Structure formats: C-alpha cells, structure tokens
Length: 102
Image 1 (cartoon, rainbow, N blue to C red):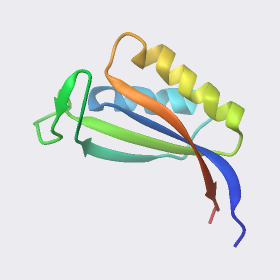
Image 2: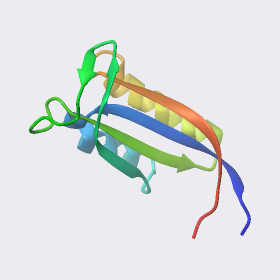
Image 3: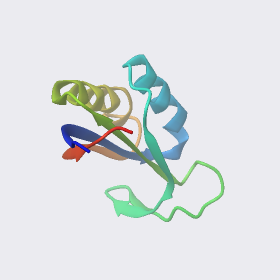
Image 4: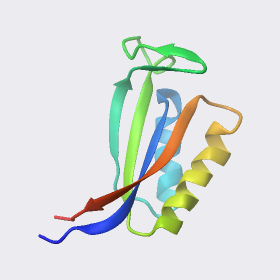
C-alpha cells in the first residue's frame, strides 16, 4: 500500500442545501464524497443540535479528497461563493491528508 498526498475539502453547512452542493461538486467533476448527516455544533448563528425534524435546522458535513491542491481550492471557493458568502450558514476548510485508493 502506497499513500499519496492529497487535500481534503470539508464543508459543514445546512442540510437544506445538501443536494445543491452535491450538484455543484458534480459540475466541478467531483463524483466521490462522504456525507455525515445530523451534525451538531455551535457557531456564529447559534446552536444546531442535529436532532430536529426535517432539514431546516440540521447540518451536514460533506468531505471530498482531491489529488491536486489547486482543484481543491477551486472547489472550496465555488462552494463559498455560491452558498456560504451570503445565503447559508456554514464553514468550509482544507486539510492536507495522505490517502490511498482501493
């Protein structure tokens, strides 16, 4: 097994826009991702408990591992500009990781 350097994009935001973010990722050529639903936490817009009914008050975490850092940067900028800059609560960040594909 040989590990390779990669960049992980992490997007934590409102569950209400999960499908829209997945569509944007597809437009950007990203077809592999992991979604964690009903994420709880506190931020500048208050507490999200993750235990409410429906998507109106719950969060999701979407993670994507991308080989090229510049491409990961383009993904995070697109998500920020389309969703997080003005319209929805959330945070997006990059992490350096070492990964392998199976």
